[in-house]
Amino acid sequence: MLTGCCQTGTATLVIKTGPNAEIVYWDANRDDLPVYDLGQKSTADSNGYFTYQIELAEPRVLVVNTLNKVTTLYLTPQSCDTLTVSRDMILLTGSNFDYNRSLQAVDEYQAYCNAILRTRHELETAKTPEELTRMYSVHYDKATQMIQSANLPSAFVKEQMAHLDYISRQIVAYVAMYSVKEMNDEWKSEFKRMADKSWDDDAFRSYRGVMQLGRQLSPMKYVLLEDGDLSNVEDPYRFMFDRCRDWFGGKSLERVWAAFIYNDIMQNKHTEVFIELYEEFKRLYPNSPYLSVLQPGMDETARFHQGQLDETLYQILPCDTTIQSVADAAKSLKGKVVYVDVWATWCGPCRSMFQYIPALKEMTDSLDVEYFYLSIDRPQDEDTWRKTIPFYNLKGHHLLANEGLTRGIYQELGNEKGMLSIPRYLILDREGNIAVPYAASPDNPQKVVRQLEEVVLSTDSSCDGE
Image (cartoon, rainbow, N blue to C red; front, side, top):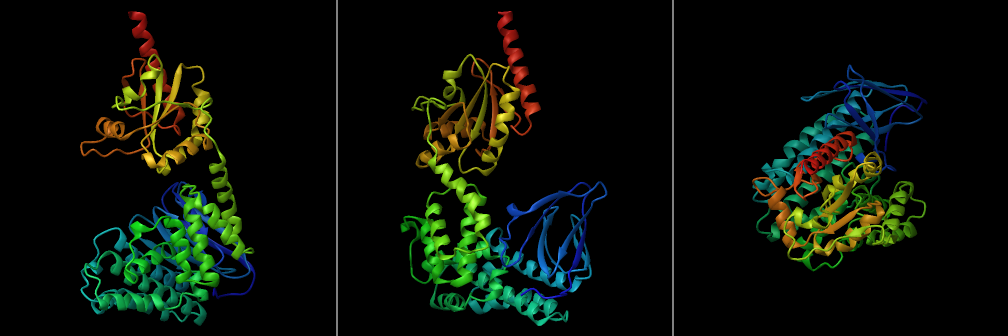
């Protein structure tokens, strides 16, 4: 429960960051989905200052991201706080300093936990559950001392201590799942002890790690306690959705399910089974505060799966075993200058660029240019590929690379280690040769136009010379 001043008034937060730095902030209260994509974006002034003000009748939690540093802040009516962020530090001052320092302590403990999934971690060396507890307790005790020594209201302290407990449980789950080489009875007993503890308290709804928690715990229990094999699960999304009932109930389950659904929306995956899962969510929670956030994204998912690929509007090129290179793939376009987009449906940055295509095409309307979308999706993703094309209205020429062409693309366009970063843009001349191996992206249309004009001009001049 949020606690603090009850008088209505303006809360002021001054953010000091880099000159013209981007600032993203979003609510992280019990009825909010605390995710970056729901945040509002602003920019600091030339001196690095930004002031956020809001009328409040009760306290609220705000998360701020700037200079790639994320800070959780506690705002109260009539308060004034300052957040200073540089490349090297985060400094908190103002009316709610003790609250904010406590929230920072929880965030630091969460970051310590999350690091297990990204880098080599000291916790991976724990040989027994007892040794693991000793290791993480150093960080747990540090955060506890910060929270309990500040003389804050008991409800706030209780909530933050519950969050520390959730993080400790996550640590046990992560180490047991990803680091323990031999899952003996001692480790299984420790994992079961953690799993059997209740998650159905009010503090869970305000826990900032709920997104990852809900997605990861259910399969862990299946593997570690039931000797299950995830490779035998036919539909992993339905499996995880159903298995969440093993851990959560009531409003906690509502929170986890909403986070689970929104994760698919946030990544623009448009996974078809989520249409069914969302309808189930709505039946169980018809008055959920999360529906207003989820509904627009689910409408998009439904529209994605209703679309059909009309091959009279979108030219689908064949891909047989003779096609081994980009030039081979675009051979039917020989005689044209071609702007090539190498992409895949699983690539978020690729999809985010599609919004700039209409404006780019309008700017190149007078040029003799063709647009060619070369997908390196896996064969099993062909249905998603076919639905993505009309969903983004990608009029032009399309080809889904087979295994041989995909290898050729990686060899032709990849780095010395054979790695290929997409989206990747190329410009082919009229002979099908790569004239610009690193063309500008659609969000920089002026540069794309200049590059295309140069290739068109050089190709036309060459033809005139002949």
